[in-house]
Length: 288
Image (cartoon, rainbow, N blue to C red; front, side, top):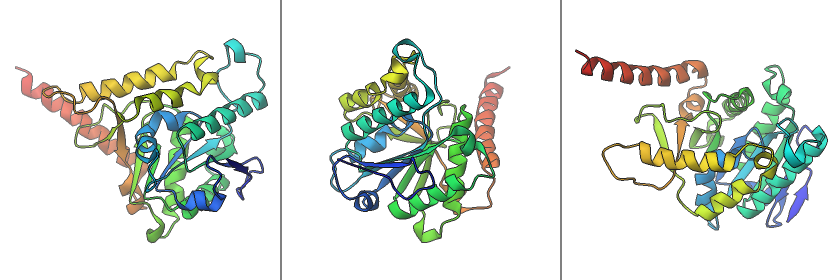
């Protein structure tokens, strides 16, 4: 394994390569890139991509964490941890997950949440643009813009802005917004992107179980994530047997990078309007 300090804006930024390959080589072989706010977000939202690339010599998964992870609930054995101790612990947990999942690389940019939410801060956008330019992945996963967590939404917006600054040949084929702090089961079936999360269930459990700072601290993200995936699979179709054992939903954000002038808020509103219209139509059709 190798752990290096790459040329990003933050001196504390880290690049971890589980199999010991060169840093540049690990990034350049990336086919699937996930960009998330906090340690453990990627294992919650992008597991289907992790599973697809797991022990697959043709496809490689790289994870990028934008914040330093210093802010979070602390209870139980972690109640007395300082911000710096907590950030270090969460970074170690994320590195363990990268090792277990056999990621191509793990990038930790180590920004504060306030820096990501600052619309005038160009540093995070420049770092993301440089990362994407080096990796040149075919598919990018990030948070969905309808997420409940402000930092998650900010990361999604910075990813979109970073991509909009790249030349078309450097853009991924697809950009997806994924589920963490707000499920996407509300979207109409025509809008949902369905990802099979059924592969390697023991791997899925192991990846989530690594983050004891969260689980032991009182947040059972492991059980909640597994439950949501199973619920998505079962409740996605009422008149057919389950096609998958576990499912995550995504929002297709590709039009937002293909059309740089498109409003993100308007794009999300259109999804909400279609859902609203579907509900109203059903009520109207069944009402006397």
